[in-house]
Image 1: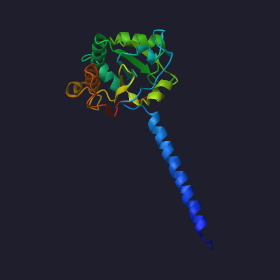
Image 2: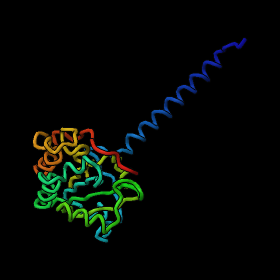
Image 3: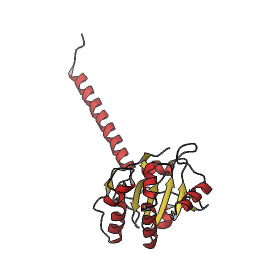
Image 4: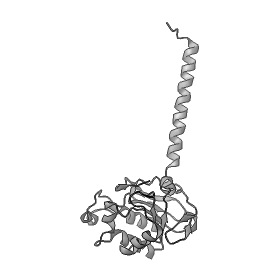
Length: 215
């Protein structure tokens, strides 16, 4: 029969405290690792683009930046690029008119749905009259994982000071039906309007919907 002494209890309490502190530290680390609206957006450096450029987030200091995770084969992406209504193309065009830098990111791995080589990515954008400022090719998934991009589309709006203003779904209706676009609240457009006005978006986070990013 095991006898529980005061020393045993003290050791048990100490171990419990250590476990609790370790768990707390892990939780804090995980929370800090994720992109947080209102905090500095994860940086990226020398990212390869479909046009042959390399870009860093710091290149656009002072400008609003939109990041759009995309997979051209995803029905939810097709919904927003459908003609009509050209929802994504219109957002991109309006952003360019406001001197906002719109960057597509393709994080699909080679052999996975949505993966494109540079020429194919440019051809796909030309085919659907899409005009992002840049298309980042991220087959390693490094940038996608840094942003915890989960779906296509998954949208991010970054203010000129580098803070993340919005992260999440493109709009409020989680469907692949084009007919829902006109009924939905477009969170990206609302966030860009708020940032331009120097205010925080009313909705800063919304659970993204779409196809999973094929890392």
